Length: 343
Image (spheres, rainbow, N blue to C red):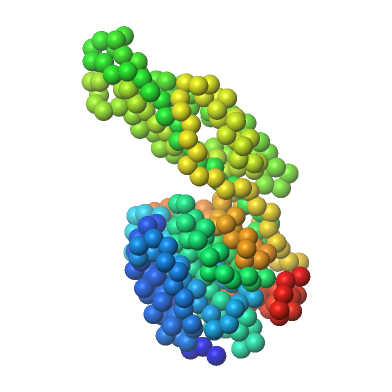
């Protein structure tokens, strides 16, 4: 058995109160190491980058099932607060509230189930999934991994991929009083982006249509200088393979700008069980990099529509419900696969 620790809402407050934007997760890793060790778990720290570490916690033997979510958040920091129905703050639903639920779930398991389970908390999910890409080096081979993201307590049947590219246009500087002597990179980029936003990136029978976001645009050095450089970062919530997306973008760019792929993960079809409500999700997760950890499931309290907002919140009722859902899911999954090997 492991110790009870602090209650669910108090633990959420502690986690949310530690800033951990992507790249700065070291302080949260320190807390998790001490807290999980303090309730009786064996903790392994996997160095990732500087003070950033993945945290693995078990009762001491190789787990057959992992509960997994991420330590990092998007900026800016938003302090914890609560009322009767909700907790608020950065990470409330994405994903520190879920992290607290997973820890509480482990404490609620029977000794037999607990011995077969572990916690894995990763860095970098919001940016490059660096923690997930390093995690296979831990050498674990569980049968199942339950990844926690806000799904309104429904099992994900699938989620879209994520394709990020940088498009850069080049021109020639000139005095803005004599624009004919220069070539505006901003105008070139605007024309290119107009064509890119009209690309049909495809549709999937389960995942639906791919979507495009032009997330960042920058160019020029001053208002009175014809800009010689301009760039944009775009993302596609994809439903098809990466080469097809890149080919469509290059066709639309037509050689008028440079295209650099910043990152890409493929869409996923996920493992589900009868008896659970299901949902198809438009966001992406660490799951594409966690295939060595067994069959992936996706489940967590909270709504993704609250994530990354200035009013991020999580319903307390869903958090309590999620403890029971995770516990039920774990017991059913462990019963499906006997100790000693995957089916």
